[in-house]
Length: 345
Image (cartoon, rainbow, N blue to C red):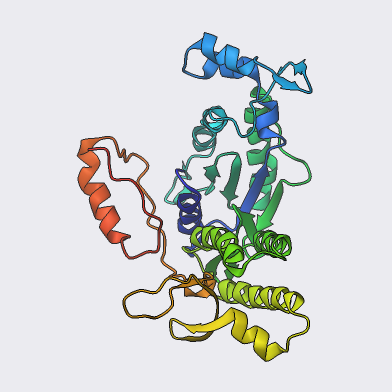
């Protein structure tokens, strides 16, 4: 998949139908970047072998000591994601060959194991018709595929779950409620986000309000843009509520000798039709004379719009796909997405 949004949309298409598979294998690879076999990459990655070998065997220096790298690729390296992706490529073809639709004969129809892979980087899930199929047939096949590449599944984190119990994938939670699939931000993802926000507020205990707003807006905007394609309105409202209480405690600690009404009017102002919004005056006065406010991003004001999955064969550098990308851009033009560079033609 080209993006996490594409992967989640593919999950929705596979799991939302009434005839969809009910069981999901949540795959977790132990130290994917740390344990990829160098020999396998040198024999199978289509690039100059001398350059690849030199890059893989370069080692690293720590405290003036050179350490050799006998396996894996540096996590965070420029080329590491591409190498890891090419290493795991082929798993879907293996599953398709092993679990095709079978004609039962004599008018009994076809048997469909409904084994489908959805992968983004080293995170993946595999669907199946039953727990037994995933445990006894799919998982051994995946383990064999990974073992050749020097990798292994985590015994503790790899689980087989019924879709009615819910599955966490790429920071989002997929679960069916009375036959209807809902995709929401996962609890772990929301918790990690709130912990990060609280840490930022604590670190800016003595900073100006504008500095704090700048620091928070970068994190809040990135998080809500990531989750803007799923059922996240309730979570966004909850996040705004938690943020309000965190900022209120931040403001009260700064002015312990002032009453609550004074603190409220000092940091919260009537802006954009809202009675109270955490905002700082930038001291800039437009022609109308009204203050130019630096406002904290409100998560619950984010427009929720379903993601339009890009076609697998679409190539932005191929002129024959120009009309497709123009139509896709117009179809998603009303969503609150960050600006992107124009096409190369």
